[in-house]
Image (tube, rainbow over all chains, first blue to last red; front, top):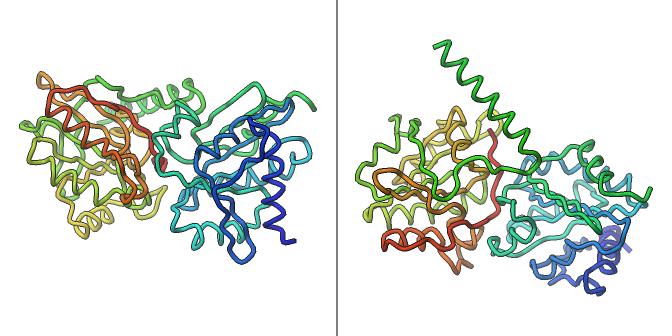
Length: 177
Length: 206
């Protein structure tokens, strides 16, 4: 089994069992490019990932795009967080807001090139005015943006985060070490 | 001149501290709906200085924070031109402002702005917010970011803040033209609804 698929399946598996309905969060479709599998969601499906029901689990959701330079700059911090805490119930999900017609030409080649181990999903939903306020009423829509979610807290950041800030923000809501 | 520099320095310090106190992700600074806009003077790609007071006959102004490089701004370019075409004659011209710093983002310098305006045939001023004061005065956080101003008792009042329509990245899937609806409402003396909308954009590099 190739690595992309494994990462994807681990991602779906771990996400699925924690969705609000208890069911697997099904993507709209999967883009398969030479073995790399990218899950595509609309917001209705994606929204379940913004809820964490299990105590002790923290989910970090980062909204980014390949065209967003400050996003690219902060991605290594998220990859490091993923590597450091993946066995400690900290989940990291990158949510790409790339243009749909650039998924195969830019997004997937970028992910492959960076060799990210953290899961990446693609949010394909043009009606931002409907869903941005559901992520956070305070979000103007600028990228990058990050949400840190636990069973009893939901913190939104409309700015770039470095590793120290990110780790501190995760530890601040995680109490089961 | 020294006093002016000192003043500007102090002001930026105050703005920075205001942001620090506001905390993470809080960009509540800037204009809200119903606020009166203060005038400013910025250099246009034509070389002229342009102010809001240069539009004494306008019923309002469609202020668009945009830039040369953000894919979402570029995806809106034709729609912004169409807005100006449709509403300038009805008293609502477009006024575009680039808040980005060329030191932080290549391709955002004044010459590149002049080239883009010429190549795309901009029919509206394209102003360079070189000191980055105007975007922060408005509270714009991204490109594209639109503020619709309405003239009321000879003041310009903010009546809409947000996106050009409900599908910023793709003109093909638009179902609601927010700015057009808002201008039409103002032309008909009606309340603007929705008056605030959200869309993805590029954070302002300044």
